[in-house]
Length: 97
Image (cartoon, rainbow, N blue to C red; front, side, top):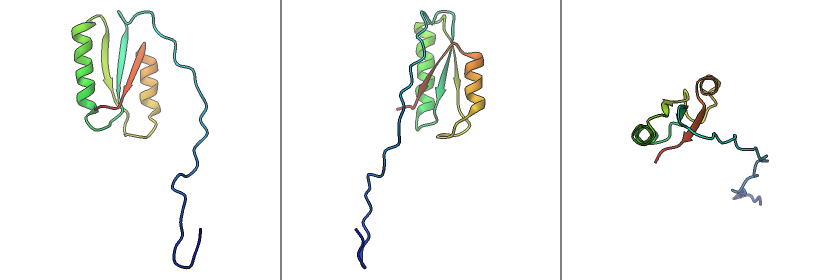
């Protein structure tokens, strides 16, 4: 609606098209595997990832974990993704508390 005094915009915008993707196949076990804990750089996510890493060390000591981070939040990091593919058997992406 437009008038000489006021213009009103629809705050809902337009939803983007979303296409479904299959989940990665589940590993039979994590024992003896390398798991990358990907810190997505949200508030307190570093503390959460450290706690998650400590949990794995205490409860599943046969799982090697490494915390990895993208260069910046909300920006694709092809180098980090390539590292995860090259070095890890699985990954957990987390956003923190």
